[in-house]
Length: 256
Image (cartoon, rainbow, N blue to C red; front, side, top):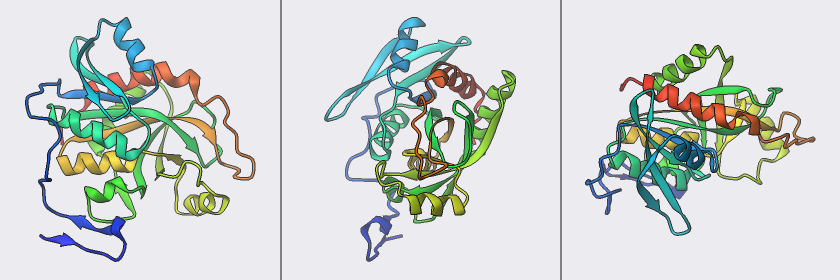
């Protein structure tokens, strides 16, 4: 199929499977299971504390992102820190996939649009595509469904530890400082319960590359009352357990 053109560039989509240049060079051999974590320096701390080995790094224009190989329950896992924002995150996800990763669990915090306590674990089952990156990977649509295999693996990890969770629809946005009162209300009306900045784009990339991906979130700040925004503690007490849960979950992923 040819390039699908549109009056608005964000809605244009090229069905070609190959681009002018491709991610990676085909010579990397990462473990097939990976945790791609939006957890600040927690990844590096975990890797250093658990005899992780740095096997590569992704070099962006502004920063180096180390890629580790760790053992969790005696299985090899690729562990990589993730940058905030859809375009940057997808760029590194592409690199991991090009290196042989096929089963990925991402983990990070989110804002809540409903009355959800801080540090509650949440599993996105669908994401509203209010970002630009996903439209380079899939035709335009309002929402994207998340991998059922990935969701099942996350549920299993949470159930094993008897940790309660909610299944949610997330609003993936590019505009951190453009979550206006009216827009927050609009998103709530169409069923969004949380907001973050990467889920729909990562899901689209994974579908395009035919790999399994899902995401575990934990609640941080709240926009439930858009007239009274609260940072709270940014979900800080959930960071360590969230990474452990993601590591547990990725071991249970079965390729779709």
